[in-house]
Length: 166
Image (cartoon, rainbow, N blue to C red; front, side, top):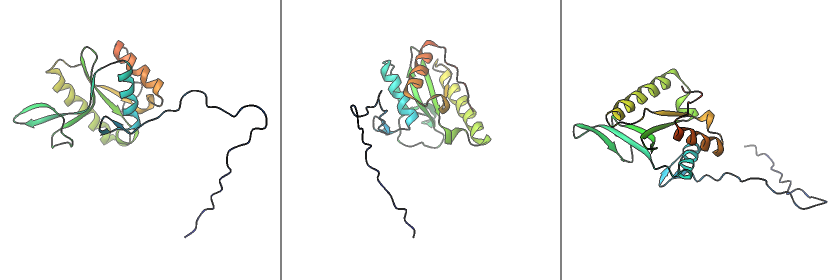
């Protein structure tokens, strides 16, 4: 088995002046929201909601066959027939928000069909409770915390329109 020789060049030396300092803050993500694992996109979105003091539930599920009626559940794993909503937010009206990551939403036409079907089922369920229609946020618009903060601000103002949704 071949092994690459790793060379550590060490810290650069600065002859004149103070040492180099980072300008701005470095993003620190923990990989979870509360006790649930979360992607970087989900974690940024939760931080933006918290900054604006917008109440939310993370990974809420709609169950279609619980004692013969549809209802929300917080089960740890999807049961047959359940749909997961990434964020159920309260902007004065309940808004279900789906975060579209690159891997699970943009690879095949089949995934695009699943996304549309899931969105329609959530909208149908939410219509009974006077929810706003689903808002999908694509990963292409969520690369930095500042971008996500802006998206949440625009959602709260009713002016957000996704630029690219599969």
